[in-house]
Image (cartoon, rainbow, N blue to C red; front, side, top):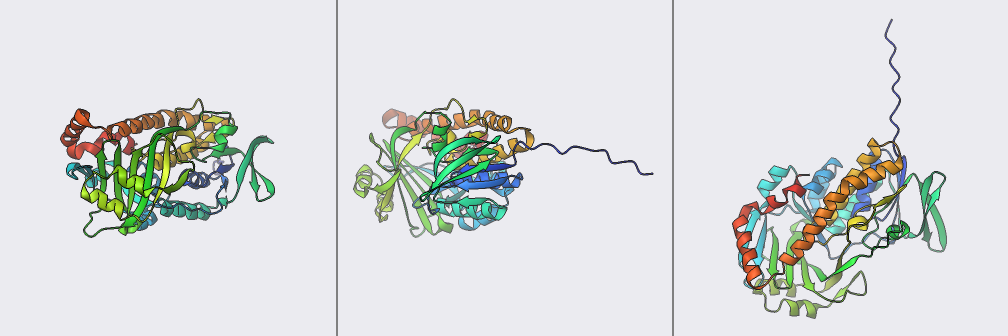
Length: 395
């Protein structure tokens, strides 16, 4: 007679449903990760259309490794570019200070470095989230976060109607000016970094190599890299500014951009002059918050740890958050413990990256003897420049 199969109770999952506020990179990555963990997922987004213009982003191996786990890397590589090298140049002369090739680092960290237009990545993630079974509802303004029958619900306004979306957990992935953060009672405001980012995309000039170029100068720098499958260049010009722009993104003053870079190398001026217009963002980050979670509510991405873009880690860290949150849901047995475990795992790493990004923002804009010392260090580092951040890329 066959031995009876012993009964093994199915592990209790910490949550079976989630509502995510925000359909940016972090919110959509979270939707995919939680669906893959078996949760039903509702995403509510204030915008009436998913639309990102004039902005590219860099994806480092710590992010592309997760996107590969999601089964999305092959599709991403069709619209992204794998740059050849990081080329750091003096903004005034145009001379290369140092160059680091990405190829050895890709081998070392087991996933590619990619540059992509933000809209292309957002659309890919939205399509993947829907394919996984997540429900995306646009045009939904959050008005309240409330407890509900042992769970939590997001109350949103759609047109003239108030609707409630209930779930076991709620994730605030709604950016640096997060409404969910305010509903958690965390009043810490985003901090203006006294810098503006002017962004534009321009056609790729003849013979322009597929590099990420970083031009450094006093009180300003310029980042240039290809997007749209190599058909366009993404320009990000960072300048010092004491007053933020009135809107989150606004038409940029081209005259102000050209004035800031008027004495820079001809190649820099030519690139900026090729832009028909600029969009302008104020740069903000957030001091480490007292908490990211409370009960069944947690923050993710910029809502929890907005960081300056000087390590190219904003999107990458939101994607890491999403994967970590899904693991916590799968390994913990109740919602509050899962969200607290996620917060505990992520706080130290993101705080270190925030600090390092702030430091880079100072180092990039040095002048005089400190600039000379910086350039000497960069030249001596050479090809090992990327390995300085192996603790980020290899995690």
